[in-house]
Length: 295
Image (cartoon, rainbow, N blue to C red; front, top):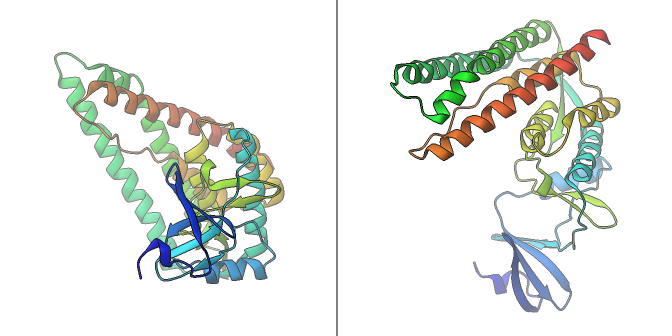
């Protein structure tokens, strides 16, 4: 029964269309978004309802293959307005779903070791790239740009290592850690608005530290909006604990590998994007760490 016409026997489909990658059906009962099922979100939505968080689209119906949601004719707003709405929603989501669980030191050690291992790996990765560039007779534009900014990469690595050590030394003595339901897939396109605002695409949602929502949102919007006032607003609604600041900063500061190819223009853009991100995140972390230590 894996057929679009079988998604709901009560709906008479008049037309099927696409908006970007979204499939929309016009029926005798209105317009709906149809998605192939990746994850069963019914229990999650019932849980959010029970916590008085309602800013998600309720399923009209679903079966083994498809999920059907009411189609919302999204109101166009600026990226800054979208990001602001998302911050409001996730601060409310985290507030309404927070609970504490006993700290498991083995899991804490694993996170600590995983991040340190990643930092060691990424240090060796950029060391090797630097050595290769320095051995070249003629530097490529991307190689020259990388060498000019290599100190930025090492600074980011050192700062990340500092914060992950601060996190571990702070949290290892705690009895409990704070957990919330997180969306875990935050980007601007995952918010829609009509008379209300809704987060969509909940397939990666889980129970974890709330900082992971801030981590994913920052990475997806840092080049589109100023994240600092958003972070301040979030903290005014749902203040991060000291160790949560440290873990967020450590994760944000880990440099990513370059996705290099045989096309120099792509490589130069990759290096530019990396260094732009690192400069932005170093400035962001430096500013908000000083606020944390002075509070």
